View: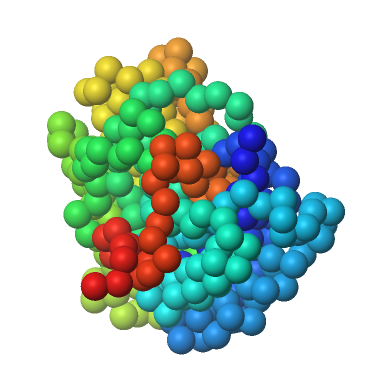
Length: 342
Ligand code: KG4
Ligand code: ZN
């Protein structure tokens, strides 16, 4: 029985969570700065970091207070330590190191991408490995074979944009605002997916590859003329149809490759993590694919698909069990694995 305090600040969400035994969320809080960045059309790293510094202590206080627990109840501190924006990562990593030293408990450094897949443990006592998982977020769209939590073997993924990034660009093309994924998803439900023919790169290819650059550009040219610079003249229904056609193509690619990857590895459990795992079209399509094949589909709750700290606590539990502790001189890295100061 271990209670882990997990912290996450790799991008523009500041989050703290108390997770017991890798699957029970005792308390969690997320402070998002997404609204602050809407007017900028994306995250401003310097501002995001300042926001984290302001939010972190209060969130930690809140999760402990709401759980009715003292800091002495915490067995270990976990932190998302890579990849991410360096200024943002530094906030939670520094905070976690100080708390671990002050409270005299182990520190666990967690890979944010691995944690997105480990989110499937939250609310589930046991999970049957191996599985093939897709992590689809603003920065990643990759497929992994995983034999145990956090052990990810890369099977393939996007060769250009991440799915979330493509959604955000599609939303910008359609003047919908930021972050675009949820907006496109919502409007897609009221549109006609057959209104536009949009490309599905690599869909008939055996390789586990995605490409969203062509899809994104095709949408741009269809709705803003051959050079992509014309004003948007679509009426409301036209925008809904464009969203539906984009979603249909993106989901088709993401789901087809996940099923292909699982079949190639002879695996009957599939999982999805990351912000794009919130997508209603993707969730429906994968539910249908899994039901048809008699496979197990693991989808995290929506709050655990987007950036959160509970997923960091979930993976940290298994790392703690395996004795994979972080050094006190841990430094975060924007890419690759964080490690001791060199
Ligand atoms: O995992 P996440 O919160 O942060 C990163 O690690 O990137 O993912 C954020 C991304 C954004 O690009 C956002 O537009 C996308 O996930 N997203 C969605 C949906 N909800 C969030 N994309 C498609 N459909 C959604 N419902
Ligand atoms: Zn993420």
